[in-house]
Image (cartoon, rainbow, N blue to C red; front, side, top):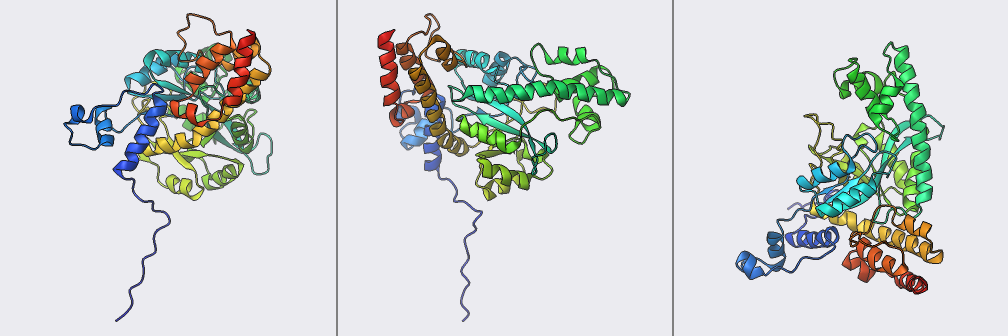
Length: 425
């Protein structure tokens, strides 16, 4: 008799998650998404006593989904809705956690946080950073790449460094937009600069979408997609680069400032494998794999190949077109969200600790303003000014951390220094 060949286990296959795994993931995600823990449901009262405790909790809390939206834009970059309107729309769509990821700016975060506090949802301060991938690091040359950055409730730990990079990119966008208009003019497609800046809005660096809207208004194209296909795409005759930093620099900046980095829409890249390999070496944490139409073929395997977390989002802009994916349409599995938070929370907590320690070492109204840059802590009713160390301890720590984080993270050094500051005020 011949010997049977042993079947080798597939390296690419992972053991399916059990209902117990999913229940644990659900508890973990809910504890973070809702910092005030809900009362434990009575199993007997909720479901007749026939389900195990974890299933009873899922039944009582509305199922095993907590909807995260990890890619959205407001009118602080190229979106159509204000941060408040975006938050309200997300809330109506059932989103519990919203990442506002405007292009090269975090200016909309405070308004989003204020609106989210009223709606009872949580904001992840984010930004989508424009970059260039150039193996030889030749300035102005290379493939455009967008990197998403996700930060904790207190924002980046070295905000001034990040803001300097973002400001340089935004300043470059003005020159880039003017170069695009010059190219359009040479193609006998004149567009007025004043119209583009009016579409962009006051204080907003103009981007390709704003120029595309001007092209539609002027009647040169029927819609925004046609404007990109005909003129403004990466290979289009009117395309121009700005002052974008190199991709590796961006990823390293995100890591240095206490953020999670994710490659945005990799399916738009010409050579994604080489770019992902390079960014993984620079410290990339994740990449977008999921869209509203499902998992993009090939990119799930690339994420596994390079050990990257698989994420996704709607990339919602609020254009109002029928073909646009609505905010909250990409529903990530609860186990994916759990993996995301397991990776992010220690990094965010470390960033928060750095921010508070810097304030404790040099307490001042100016430095307090930096701590509260992204809005009033959620536990504050806004009736009294936050101007003492006691306020910082009681409000910031309780607002920025979940109960698990408060227990797990070593913050005694922060607490003692801030309490000393409180005693002096």
